Amino acid sequence: MKPGAVLLTLDPAAAYANLIFQRDDIDYAVAHPCHPSVFLERYTKEEHADAFGGIAAVQHVAAAWETGSDAQRDQLSKVIRVMYGPVEQVHWVTVTQLAYLEPTVVETVACMVGAFMKRRWTKRLSTVAYRRRPQRRCSTDIFRLRWR
View 1 (cartoon, rainbow, N blue to C red):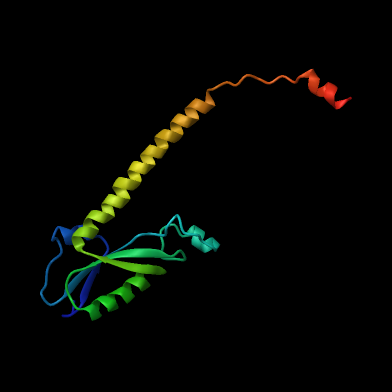
View 2: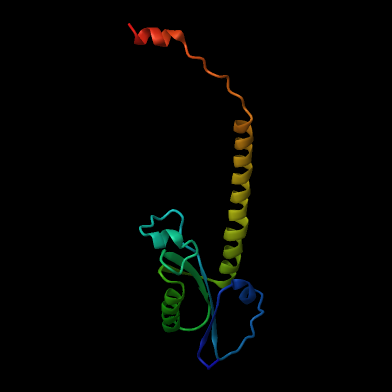
């Protein structure tokens, strides 16, 4: 890499663990997409089909930047918006915050909610599927009211 360049990585784990070879003449950044929100309204078929972002659905990006100038950060923000676009906003945090945030939100919380929903859904299906309801019998009173 040329001196003054910025190395942009996707996952914060290597940066957090100091596994990236460090050079004094370049700067380092991490950017990770948040993926399109399931709560925002989507208007086109392309937006509905874009579950991971980068095609049509708008998403946010969490980025870490700890060295370098504000001008480099602004330029980096433009690159991030192109890479993961369409991007609504780039949220700047530290590498440590991003390293905690990314796996915690995705793997821990999402998997916990998914496991909880699966258990509840399985329990609900088992109680509904095997419950026998008494069959209704037509009352002759209904027919009498009709013919009066």
